[in-house]
Image (tube, rainbow, N blue to C red; front, top):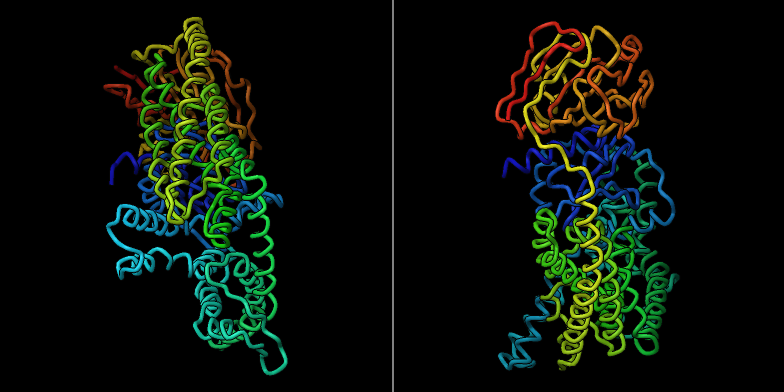
Length: 617
């Protein structure tokens, strides 16, 4: 694995508050999704400055770090650094809305790859039929249908497993309960149509549960409470035998007699709603999604909306709720980013926009959204208008997809079905409308906004050119090599090279002339940029962030200009040590890679103002 990913992973863990602050972490297509014990311990601004991090979002109780398409590589290194515990819970309370979004996302996101794979098999099957490679009565057609439909038919089992993981009950038992609903014997009873009574007393409603969504969600929700009750009251010595047995007996009875039928009724009503929208207001969902999807992504709302498309697909065999508007929005965003890459004179923006546009055309928009379109604003506005226009056409022409998958250019194949190419042609036209309208609007807006940004850049004081720099000791004490730091993150030089000071005094002073770049809310750390471009982090103590500012007093604020020797922070050394924390103070050069050679005057006692570091270009 690339060393760059190892370094980035270490930096991320350090800045989210250390591995002790990580309750859980997983990743989606572009984001690391952390559940932190305390979000206040994370340094959001420092994270967003890391090379490799596009954006940090706090949403639905999650601390989300947008990485991009290589997120899996970073996550692989993250896993090596954290110790996850099922019993660790976040101290932050979630609102009802955040809880619902978090539950829906946690249940459906893990099964998206399976649904996407099955959807693309369906698309390939449709192409083979359209081009007369196979016929609908051939065994090849029959088997390819098996390959594609298996995931959708057994969808209740997949949902049961992921939902149980989310609700922290046994996923294998949940999958077992779901399997009951799909057993061939039950299907035979439903087909026969004769009334079924359990023990000749409890009536079981005849309903088919293949490809269903709502029934299993209700069933596993109840099972999570039943299972916890049984685990609490059944002795551990016989727990392994009786908890699974009683879970199957109780949930099997409830599933077929009460919960399954209720879920089926709710599912049928949803089908009526979907049908009504398709027949009477087909333009509305695609228009809304096409226009506002970027905003939904920013706030995580799309995680609650996208499953509606999956539900419609399971009920009616197609999705017109989410898919058409989503693909139009994604193509609009990709086009806006491509136009920015063409017109901008800023090299950094161009380097972000070009690869971001390519991945957006493939259906992954977040790197482009957070790296270009949102910061510049005008590409976001243009893409929302263009996505809305394309979505409106898709809705008016009843375009819908017959399987789910990533909403990029390859997704157009998902619109081939029902033995017609009409939906395929209509989604192509909708995409063309989105691309052309977005391109025109972005070009028009760019003439104004890019010119304005260029003027602003000319008027703004440029960042200092990095040259050699002398760094004085910010406080009095014994200076040691950075490898002697009691925190592995600093000792391993992940944050940069530097020195450790064992303070004799309790006042911290500016080590050079410069600007306060960062002042942590807890005042235990401060970042400075010198007039010559050196970036220094002064970190007072080990894990002193836990003190939440107690014992620290700041005499400057972020953005202040300082002169060498100006007082920055004072701290109560005795109180900090009595609380059980080390006062080791790290002086870190966070842009160490910008210097050819660093001379460190360590293993000596230094007074405030004495030379401790020399940085040479």
